[in-house]
Length: 165
Image (tube, rainbow, N blue to C red; front, side, top):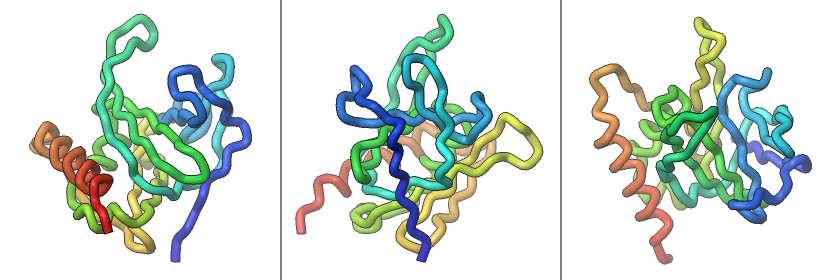
């Protein structure tokens, strides 16, 4: 059984996400993912994050003087973690494609997100998604309708969080 839990002592409350830890999912600072504290990157050495998927959302923000869209993934583990990735990155696409294939019942269980470096490009980062001990296999290509995949991923996430047992 594959279980990883990231406990990040370097995460501090971030002003707009009080009490949570924001994780940047890209390979810009010498690691697969990292946090920022006073604009200083701190690499995360843990290989995965396990918790409950609470929210997927797209947000427009400004980075390096440009307006961009980001995918924000909220995972509840030992605390809330907000993973940020560019909305058109392979990391975001692999998460969205995997989540879109799941049912709300499957998302009622913890999921594990595991960043995976690309093998042919040093800048590419993918994400493996696990539900319990099962790897979620979801492929995509240039013809994938990302608007529909995103709608499905957001809908299944919302439905899972509204389930009552």
